Length: 610
Image 1 (cartoon, helix red, strand yellow):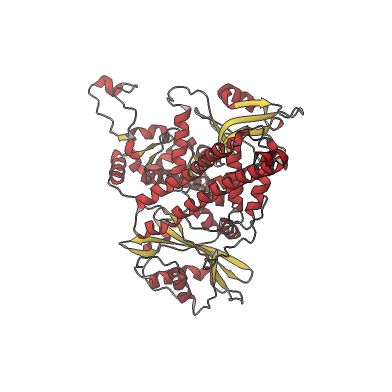
Image 2: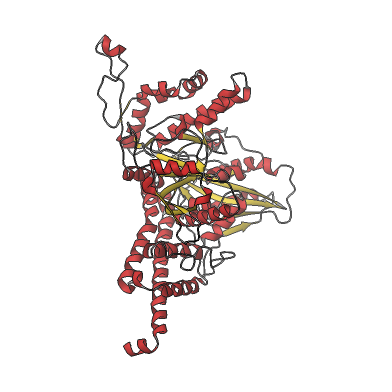
């Protein structure tokens, strides 16, 4: 062997390169096998109403990727001393890996896994385009599971008006849920009733069909059938939520149209669990229903957050090449803990943790990162924005406003590096660690726009009412998910394009069950009653709901709407009752649609046929 190595060193190099590539592919295949197995088990947890198990699996599945990357790095260092291999070996590794991607069912995910492992092993100055997949090397178009007896990505059904009811029943039954429906025929009738408007006065064309993805989408306490109705040149997306009610299953409502699906797949909701052999085919199908939804966010919604990060970064680089505006300090009230900047033409904000925090903030960088991780792993209930976390992110220096650079130098100098790495005179800004979120309109700015219009403006009055009602609903949804926001000021909430209010300031969040909700003690003396200072003892997790009003309800219009709809948020009993329910094991229902749309809320009259 030694003689052959001396005579043919290129053979040995190729053998090492192939061994590294094969080990990386083995590591990815193990990761996706475990990921898919955990996703498939969601069906049994749903059937047995194991909601705590579902929550636990959701948290644990998020950690799978980093665990498998670390395992693979350890193996490569132990078996191949990968970090000490010369760069020409790593160029060969990538070529061998591309060969292993041929006929693979998850090539885009495997490329991202390769990048993750490579970037752990090689120094940042080395993992350039030659060594990682900056662009995909293998197309994901038309990948299908061609294994014997494998189910297709989606199924197509061809009903007539007369067989529509029976076809919908067959669609539901084909998922083979091992639970009895309360009255499936009745629920299908409700679905048909909801379909009357989109199909009214519509001639069914020769290609009339219903296509549904073959995997159910599990999240929280629901299972969702996701598909689309095709008729002529029109396509109507839909989703049917299935939930438990009194020990049996019901179809809770019918969601139709792109806007309903966008809310269902919102960045403010927990990831779905769905069993997919070919995830790119699922994303392609979903994109046909939601063309405005970035593919990155669809991968995130399916629990494939690392792929979402990869695609987001590619979209970001593409946008950077085709824009010329500059990064700036984000508009709005500056935070004490996070420094926020944005690129006006790009619908995201970039957040980095400051190096120091003024009183009364008492926290650390690691504690703040822990809060963001908590949000990533928790049920966001449609009320907390998902974040993408990056390290060592490079930006062109000439795209940064000088004011922003000075802001970072002042408040987060440890996170900033400016260098001319390539020696070509083009400096780059490297941010050591940051979070990226969807940009929203800060709620305080949204309200101020209405205040500026004046009380006689009917549209402004409706805007205030909507914002305040949504704000209270957001807090109540968070409480039901066992989250106390901590800092409940308007500036820490944002308004999405669908008018939903979402929380995005996480440095003070706590579990509701960890908080001590108290009434303000009665004053013992006249001096205490008249004092402008707090005269009673306050523990680190003590919360006094009565004291929220002075900070939130200074505006009379806001106060009127708030007291009409959400006065209970100022009552300690509201908080204590929710805390007790959660401690007793209750898991709250989270509906990604208005409760008024639930079939259960309608009169149980037989709907007219479509």
